[in-house]
Image 1: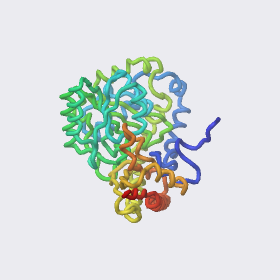
Image 2 (image 1 turned 90 degrees about the vertical axis):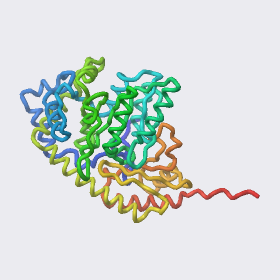
Image 3 (image 1 turned 120 degrees about the vertical axis):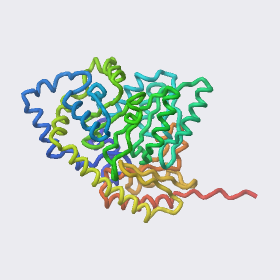
Length: 394
């Protein structure tokens, strides 16, 4: 059966509070269209449609190195960065190169649902590290590592989303980042930071990256244009030490296929060199901050007093904690009947039962008036879905 042409996870005539998609009206801007036309009309157009160099399109690498150096105040060379086909490609490649079947990988609880799927595809054991409202808890990380090492299990990698976390929206403090680096270096743990929301800050800039704080040692940092420019471009970047980037460049799939999406990379490089990206990001920050504010105000106005939620300073997501007599799957089912799409929490945990009283709300893809209406409906559904305690049998 041929599927419809709606974007992934979307339904017609429903309020989309489910998936972390960018606002569709921000995607094909005049500046991006001009960049496409510039590349396709260029004398070098035929070259851009050939296999690309394995590390990626040099003009885009040079732009990204300059951007990261400016914004993060670190010394970076082109040899520290390669172009990848979105963050999914990066996570999959690093899992393939730095884990082995039967090995262990540490992830946050909760974490990005599709990262769980990608990592499990590599037949590793996923071990969860608890979070609080401030992100991953370093003492819990060390406790888990001690337990695993004592049982003969030696995790090779920590996958983390430190900024505007998916699904919780939390941001890890710099102090916690230093502590996690100390622990990771002590236990020989590779840190993979999925930093795709870094540019979407509503206040000051996000804290320094793990890569910056660790001086590039035992850290890979993943960035992407999916949340800022367009997910259909399938384009991102990977930052690491010169040796580790070369290891990724030399891997079989990179050597066989060449650099990631060379035509798109040339187009995005042209777009970025024109100064359009910075203006676009500033617009997105304002747009999504308004939607975040509408969502938080609606939650405050409509939600029952025993429902709690996070207060993100950037990104796309708010994480709801429901009372023990309200189950996320039932709320999701009833909300769908009322035309509101939300994500139940189970999929964001290695142990799904840990999320049975959580919901993720995404405010990025809905209009402010729909966000307000959707949360009002969701609050009514939560009240309706309460499970009455069983009467005591005498």
